[in-house]
Image (cartoon, rainbow, N blue to C red; front, side, top):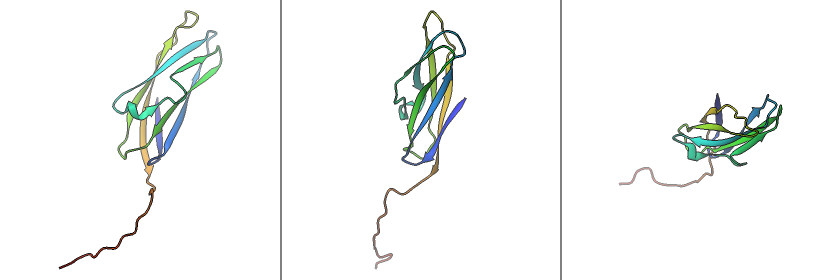
Length: 116
């Protein structure tokens, strides 16, 4: 699965990953970010999530678009044993794309085009 972070240059985009637990046991996951641009992504609400039986849990991933080139990383969710039960390890590809560039400010300046 790929999670795309698209937006305007210098904006922060937050995506929420929904995790469902169809089992009758509690599941817990620890999230880590790896890859070339992993340092540009963050987990603002923490890197762990506990999901009660037959419920769902959420983990937020945040990215601030600082550069024009696309950023890539991988979100890995590793199961921690709860009640002796392990969940499957989950991976998500994270990619960014700049859709728009808004000027931060404007400057007026005058200068001769040519001078002898």
